[in-house]
Image 1 (cartoon, rainbow, N blue to C red):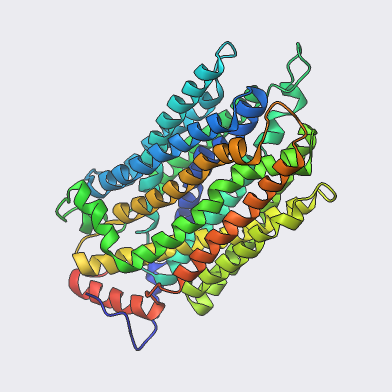
Image 2: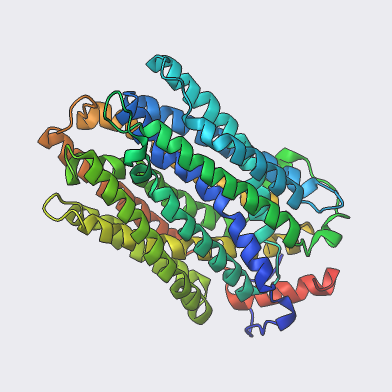
Length: 478
């Protein structure tokens, strides 16, 4: 068992620097996660509630079911990539095939025939989204696992995740533009004179699917697996033992708790944010709501890009734990401010609020994956095995359980607590009050819990220096 104290801080050798072209290629591979998950989340309500007339409960159930399937296939593909032995490595073949399949299927998610009844559309959503979730897991879990093994350097890991977060923020602009893009005049139905949101969503999804395929190919060709020569000789571990074993690693449990708590507001933003914007900030004006959503997405991405180097700098200067606390505090302020900044009197304040949220989220997804990579080293010293896939996938499992729970409860909350009526454009004042209250209070409470848990993470830079020295003495340097 490694000691949790050390008298000295490490000096990272330059040989552990990852080449810029490899960082960029790996970072671009992260766009599959954004397009595969969040484009569908962003467009599901406009397409299936506003355009096709399904209830919020039906849509949130379908999307939540897909995320639940995703959560349970993530550990499977993490385990498969840990135990794969091919001439192309453990991770890269999965990244290639998963990106290809998920990219091809993405535009099909919105192709429910116009003749379908509401019940048939619901089943179409459930089946297509759950199949897509499996394809996404096949590519994204090995890709995330690959990021945890690109370097043994404490700070270089944060640099890699900063590049990935930047690429994902840029791709987030495209995702956020989905509602606006789908309501462009080119997609208007000549017979009705209204926007065919489903057709616009399909076209955008096809473009994003092509990017997913290209990024998967690039990652496969350019990125290498430094630990593969050592890992391929380790004994394969049964699935349940691998998955359950990660929950006996104390530092990892702290990260899981933080990630689970943060996943709740993440799951709520896409759904409740749509209703707060469409029915409160821009009541009875779908095009204005689409524009606000577009500019909010751009602000989220651009201000989030600014948050990436800030989080990386805080991590380098004060350590990853302090960087995590800092990002959680900014997130708490950003989510809490939605009560005042989402207002029909000044609609553009919601755009600024989205930027604050992006700033916080960017920092979190720079720091948390880097901390998870440190946990993998800590566990290797304890167990003797490199199990990036097990840890990354069980982390994703917990995150998606939290997001799925949040998504699943949004529909019933809207239908049975707020009194939301999808058949009217202007909602009752009591309905609006409940939407605003839930949108601000639930994320704020979850982030308070996450902030408290962050105090318990024990793996400092000095600790990881000790872990690395002991690992290299045992199995050699990478």
